[in-house]
Image (cartoon, rainbow, N blue to C red; front, top):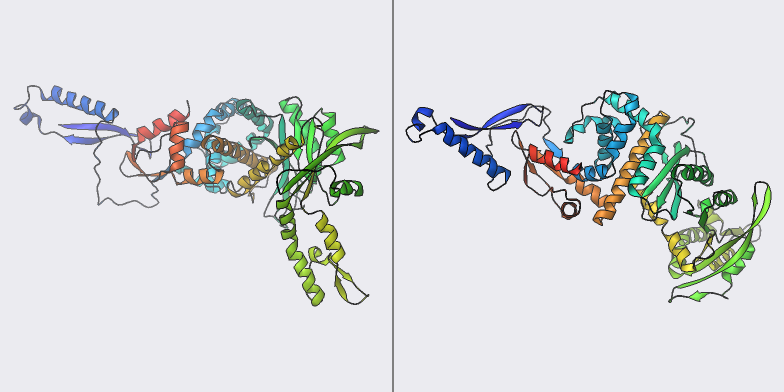
Length: 530
């Protein structure tokens, strides 16, 4: 007689049984027990109950002579349970299953998206390698690589619906929305309709695509779109505003963007859509009248030792539907000692280079250094002190223009400062999510790739809010949260840190147990889907 335990193999899902305790021969036991079968059935029931209540640890029988077979990989990721929690809170699984019904695919579309999103956060790589490494997840992922590419083609057409679904779940704060543009490069030689040569943010010669992104004041992405690589940044906002207002119907919003988006066309688009705007304004490239106002000490209010601020309402003439229209615009000007130091530090290298070229005309330079050099008498090079002095006058000054006449200067500056969060989102997408280079060629696949990155970014940003830790640290923690199969049914966890401790307390995802059975792990993941 033996007490046996039933379990399911994590490798193939088939039922197995193993001996927990050897009891002895029935004939021998009859001498000691009136009914050995009934007695040990009761013992087995008590052992089962105790194990469920975790009152006693389960004994592990390990064969120290057991050898691994070729291509064995017993390492699994537990950190994806934290991602699963937010993924299901956003109801992405319901959205995918609902919208994929019309495609009548045989594969599990939700399983494919989970694989793509979790891998994009934990270990970003090509779609092929992501598929090859899908075995590190506990979710059932029974689909082919061709299924993945077919999914991407279907998924691309759901961009607007997906963004609206996420907004309805998140309920972004949208009185103020931030907008910015970045680009992503492709390691290809020949441009096409979407991937074109343009001004790369990373100064690369490769073809690129432009991405415009809207974000709420908490740093949570709201929507994005792609544009051909040769599209100027300022030309992306008008179509984005139209699509944004059409899809979300949020009422009046205030669009915040940097000086690259500050064009008459964009301001007209804001006005025609009934929206407001807060844009930075280049002081150095401004008209002489604005420069004069900036440098005039009259009207500045000093705040502490290193900051002063002033503003005025100033008329601006724009053309709306073929007619000249005058609008009142608020100009907020401030000077910061920190900005002054930074401007001088950024210029220092070019100035030093220019001075060396003057002394040694054969040295190589660029526009940054050459603009401080002039011909003194037609032959000798001279350092342009007047040019430098003129630039230094405007060091530390910053200008913001806005339609929001009733908001205080401090409110306008505070609103504008939130723009750094969208720059941080681009950094996370490019660094932590490794969204580029993009190893896809079909336009629908490229769109789907960035949709996966968008969902991944939303999840990471929400986790930042919930856990109070940066995206990079969260991704690193979840990446390290692995476990190793040590018996047919038992895993040993390999990692636990403060972030996982917070996830246990705040998200109720408990990855702290050192030993976990396959059933316990299934229960952890099941709890994230409630």
